[in-house]
Length: 465
Ligand code: ARG
Image (cartoon, rainbow, N blue to C red; front, side, top):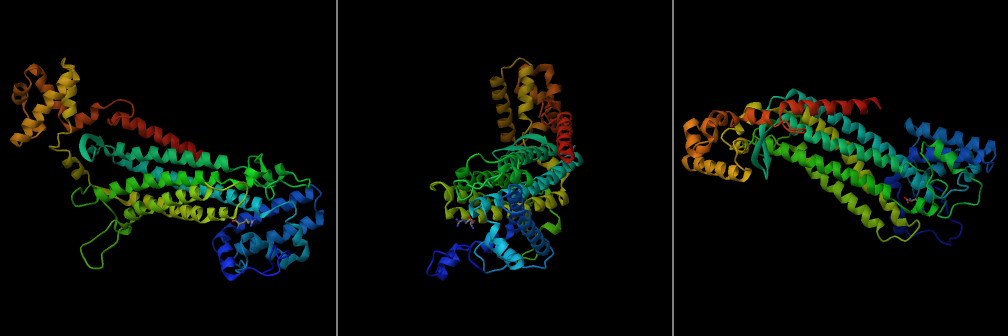
């Protein structure tokens, strides 16, 4: 394939230089965005009378035909090009001849590649937002279906206070909701056009940057041509948003792995999202959950890679920037797989309601409820805490549990309780404990039902937009 810059060289590049310099092996996937960017540029060149109408039409028709043929699998991207921009220009030259050489008027590969990545990432944001919304929908369905189910709520992975399973599921709903917002924010900020920045300093041709920005669906143009070709902050932002998503999914996956152990048995994963062992016939391993957790590592790594590539670069374009693509592509591919996989795993999982209920028995997780009751009987919270602590200690020493305490035992432990002992027996019950936490965002069925309605509204607003 014809090189774009052979003129000044007596000798071609060394094989290793070519290999190092080549980005086609990974940037070929930008072909569509590259062609769309070129079509907009060629149209603008005619509208600004930099090319004749005929020249522009020839170029645009050629590019459209190339796009359609690659799309239909009838045309291969040539493998001997340096990068996707060179490859597409080469294809255009083969098709329409010398006039193809006019496409690059008033443009550089530097503003071209910055445009391509922004267009590409815009689509990536849209796809990931769609995946998140589907997963949020599944969380809402599970919360709705499991509304009456309680399980131990933990802090320090120790039983703390009983909560509703629906409450636990909705916690992830809101994390993903912020993840969705972050991606949408990122999309808004990256959706500005660098096209027309040229190599770094702009161009002397009378171009119209607003025109190409409009044609490509950008919300405006970047005001500084050096910034336009040099920065990849939008890529960092995308990678950071993605890393947060991967981190959230990894935490959720970790819980599912724990809940799926014989010690917990809170959840049973469907066969279709598990794998067997080559040696132990009894095994059913939660590989999907483990890989969701494991793959968060590379997504976080890609963020660090991008920041490291950028941090020492002088303005404006440097070839180091070519290293932006693999982390971006890898992160998108990973989340494009992992979010739907999480959805599949969650939507087919069976929650073991009896086991969850059983796990709250005798776990002292209603101790706070008893302390709260004492406060209503005039104790300061600190004194109540001490009194209930002593009761717990007594239970542990005698091998009993809180819910087995009767009126007499309670009165002898805390004489000030008096006639309140009957009520104390009631507050020690798990269902009553859960039902009492009616504060906004709390775990009482009334509060979680309101939260679920809010989550539904949130989803519906997204699905409408
Ligand atoms: N493949 C390059 C990249 O990804 C395209 C821009 C090349 N520009 C240049 N001046 N060599 O960044």
